[in-house]
Amino acid sequence: MTQLFVEWNVDPVAFSFGSFEIAWYGVLWALALLSSLWLFARMVRREGLDPRLVDSGFLYGVLATIIGARLGHCLFYEPQEYFLHPFMDSFPWIKLLDIRGGGLASHGAALGLLLGLWLFARKWKFPYIWILDRVAVMVPLAGALVRFGNLMNSEIYGDPTTLPWGFIFLRAHETVPMHPTQIYEALAYLAIFFLLAHLYWRTRLAEQKRGVLFGLFLILLFSVRFLIESIKQPQEAWEQDMILNMGQILSLPFIVAGGVILWRALRRPAQPYTDMPLANPAPNPTIKKRK
Figure 1: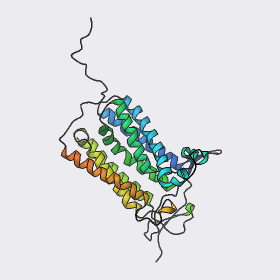
Figure 2 (figure 1 turned 180 degrees about the vertical axis):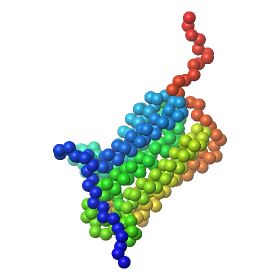
Figure 3 (figure 1 turned 180 degrees about the horizontal axis):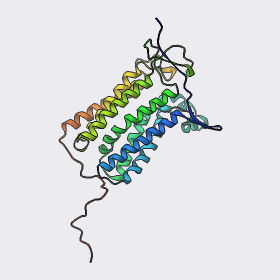
């Protein structure tokens, strides 16, 4: 019986202008950020909030995500490069800035985003959980696009498989079909996005039950990540003999946190937001106009 498989040999470069190249990974990262901006703008408009929240929130979110993703990769997956050298040794430390040539870690992006959004909420003086519930809707779609970028790069794939949809990643010098875990994750993230988008736009959970969307997001997304990691190739050689790889270890705290947040949110009585910066705030009746 002939085994079915897909020979994957896609050029990771989407466009080139002379010696300047734009990779599919970069294009899909850009689409991920732009889709988040579009969704956030729609949410702010739907809730009648100050439109300045959109640009401010996008700036905080983008910077925090990229910085967190890069630092996360360096600290979680390549700590020996940065901590086994003298602090003043310029070479390994300057690599922290090498986003094009280095890796990006989704768990680091998550931690960076959480910090950036906390600073954003403090700046605008509104409840932190408000932005977390809304970002919970945006992130799965962005994550799916980034995983398709990994597919275009022929990276972060799974173990060998005999399933008919196995991919032979020729550019990675593989000779047998492997699990296309990038596609598994992307499809799972899209399903989570559609579920949370439905709950946001078709129910009043985000308005009255603070934390439900964010708790569900953490549980679902990082449970998917934990399960799919079990059939992934290790990203670093030192992960080979670990019972749980680094991706699984880093997913566990997020799953637990999501369970706690969801449990507390469901127990808490409905609490509509009354302290958000509105687009057209009502005039204060106690303030009299001067004649």
